[in-house]
Image: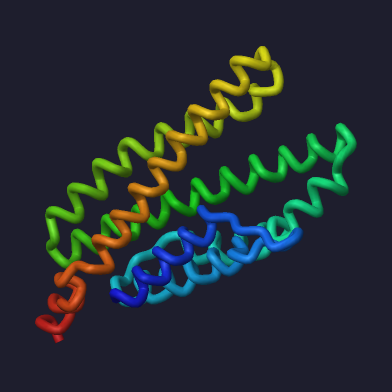
Length: 198
């Protein structure tokens, strides 16, 4: 189970950090989503969790492929129509990632519940209640930035980027807490119940 959370941690870290060599993203997003898929596959199977997280992770592996060559794509789309299309693509990708994060947090809450770790469950739930509304608001504001005054546009963009970065770092810290939790060495509650009924 610790290995599963390690994959989730590194997957989201790959998505958060961008390191470009010429025009290729070395920490490619599709690799990050693949790691997330591997971590989710193990957790959802072990804890008998049913949601769309794995399907969405696979979908994001495919649709995030253009981001590997993001700089080149932006340069090729230097026309106004190309820039708008790329902006719409980035917004759609951001929303899909937000939905994936929603499902991952749901999985984390269920795991914490089944292993009986109230501290992890409480921290994750508090973060969930802050992260989701905040990121939804940021995502909602993005399409309207082009209609704002230039100074306001810069201010809102900078503020959104800082808040988003802080929240994503906190999310990584919580994933690290799960990865280091000794409770993960224990059997899921459901598994013990099933054994008792057998």
